[in-house]
Length: 212
Image (tube, rainbow, N blue to C red; front, side):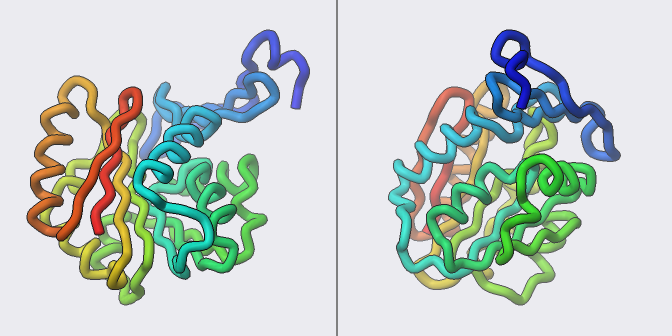
């Protein structure tokens, strides 16, 4: 890490991919931040969001969570948080962008997590094809500032419930600004029709949902 980043943010890596036209890793105050199309994907801000959401939903360390599915890997901020909470759990991470997967491994330490399996592929297709079941499912699917429309699809959400173990939880990271305000309200109504218990938590531009 460079001491110069404490004065001026430094771009240490830049690339593009089929799915993200502008991918950057910035070093700011000695820490790395991943941006896709100008939107933060990993780093201290994202970590704060997830910590607060986990606390709001009562997702606590050492509870009986043995299998975790993370849809949307990016730099792996949420994966590291889950690893710290559930040391014995197996984690499957799915991301459509191979460039993002490589970044997560090279710059954010994902290759050092022994019980993590990363799948390069479409999250929607993975959910419909997998025969595995999970105690905790994280949906963190962003293409820059955009969220794929299928995240709000009843078919997709019912499939999440199908692969969720009894007593398990699905946590969805969504937005609530601009056009996503109405979309998030619609998502809440759809979730309430599919899951027995649904709660939400808002912070800054994000709105999280927990369905059990």
